[in-house]
Image 1 (cartoon, protein in one colour):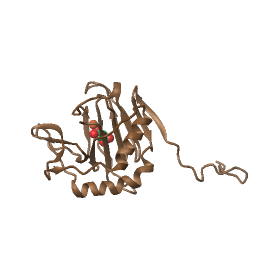
Image 2 (spheres, rainbow, N blue to C red; image 1 turned 120 degrees about the horizontal axis):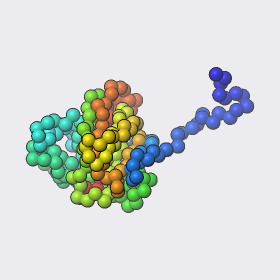
Image 3 (cartoon, rainbow, N blue to C red; image 1 turned 90 degrees about the vertical axis):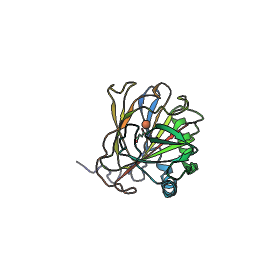
Length: 223
Ligand code: SIN
Ligand code: FE2
């Protein structure tokens, strides 16, 4: 193949930053490719501070299973699970103290991504932070512990790539398989708010910024 850039061809790609692209995955569900990249420099130190206060931990389900993803939260409410069930709580049960505050970069990103997906005035009050190691997975589930389903879910992927499953309204419905890369943001709301979704077992790898892991931020209006 000839070299694409001869002496008279401008080098179009020398300083090319990819335009964020959007992929529609439902009537009111979108993947915003690379949307979070301009925020990453602020997100990562904020994440460090959160986990120094409220560390990642493996929660158990009501049926006694241990979740393979480790999780923590920030914001005025945090998602928790134990033998009694799932709920949002203002307190981190590990410390019996409030969750770390939601960093401004998190809420700004959430509001901007929701708007880009057609949901105006989204103000997240809860951010569930999931930590995946190679092999970690999240089985198909609905996000339905929030007080109202009128607000979207904004999900930010960082670190290793994952395969996101985006299904229907029954667990057994066929699910789309969508690769989510570092910086991608998935937003689902409205008619798609209660779709089953999950994450296939994470493949081994090494991400230049995050190492052998994936971190997902799901921003919600829970209360
Ligand atoms: C979730 O459903 O809470 C997380 C989804 C993801 O990790 O991409
Ligand atoms: Fe979820």
